[in-house]
Structures are given as C-alpha cells and as structure tokens.
Length: 121
Image 1 (spheres, rainbow, N blue to C red):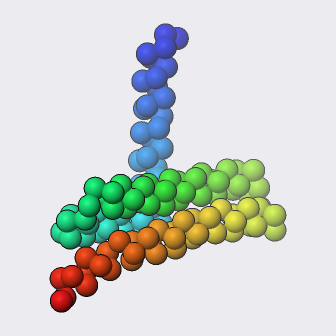
Image 2 (cartoon, helix red, strand yellow):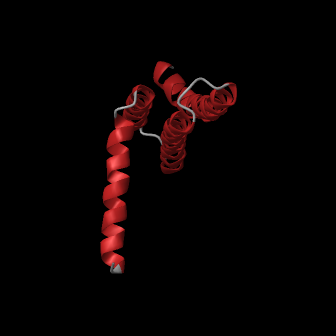
C-alpha cells in the first residue's frame, strides 16, 4: 500500500479508538472534567504557560485513561475467567490513572487558587 493510504488508514483506526474510548464511563468523567477545567481557565484568564500546563494535565489524564481501558480489554481477552494476576494488572493500570489524576488535580489547585483568591479579595 502507498504510504499516504497507510497513514489515512491509521488515522481512521485511531479515530475509531477515540470513539470507543469516549463510550467508557471513566473516560466520560475525565472528558467532562477536562471541559470544566478549560472553561474555568478561560473564565479566569490564566496565562499562556498556565494554559499549556492545564492542557498537558488534561491530555495526560485522558491518555492514561485510554491506556488503562486498552489494558483492561486486553487483559479480559487474554484471561476471560477470573485470575488474580489479571486483576492485579488491571489494578496497577487503574492506579496509574489515579496517580496522574491526583497530581493533575494538585496542579489545577496551584494554578487556580491565586486566580480565585484574587476574585474574592
């Protein structure tokens, strides 16, 4: 296949993955949170650097959740019956999402708190 056709096919495959991902419950929670974070950033008129950090945090959380979803599906495919090791794999992947989410939340507080405090005073 020619290079361009392969790239178009890859883009279609990735788009299909995004659609599947957007149907996951936790993905929806993270997507809604990202929209709210960006709306607040817009309303508070954060700096360009703060925008970049917030967007990076949103991308990291969403990307990590997508990887977690993929690992869960793969684990279910490989081990359809209950398996302690498979469960641990899923737990570690979910823990990775939690780590990124918690740190992103702290970063959000660090960025938003001074802006919110300035509105109050």
